[in-house]
Length: 228
Image (cartoon, rainbow, N blue to C red):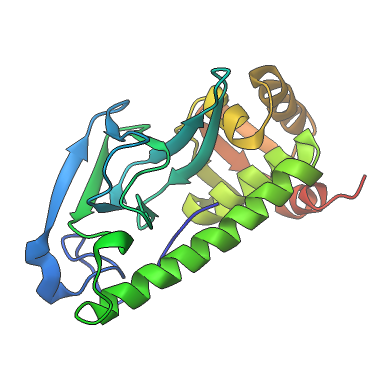
């Protein structure tokens, strides 16, 4: 679902890139802020940069010929977006909420593996991670039922951003129901219906459309992995 490097526990400043570049390379980067809904790049744009999310949330999407949209990824803090092998972006990317990003003025297609070996190796690991995550996502789209998809999605977001609060895993769900639907290959109505059912069954709590708590993690895990 995501392309992420682990945060260095000894690094407490967000001004130094996490995992992608070294402190000595900070002069080759810039930090930008995007408003909610502001595009970062479009499909077909020249891919001169790679971006690392520092705060907020990005969404990458692709629109099919018939106008239907597929949400490809959600980029959370520490995630990398914009990786390209041929100096061209192959999807659209925009901010879901106000988002701060780190701009690295290099991409996989413009790196010299002789002079930029360290960065070359890091981007290679990123590409391998992205392939692995895409394979998992394709399996979820093709093999899981609606309730299994949503259970898996909530567990993934809760594991990534949640915190324990009164014995429950609480987290924010900043994206719209339409974003979740287009990410999981479902309709908005199905997403809303399944979330309501999970709440009625006592597995989750919804304070509002964007505040979620997992009440019974084990039961939700069993539902996500169900073969029924």
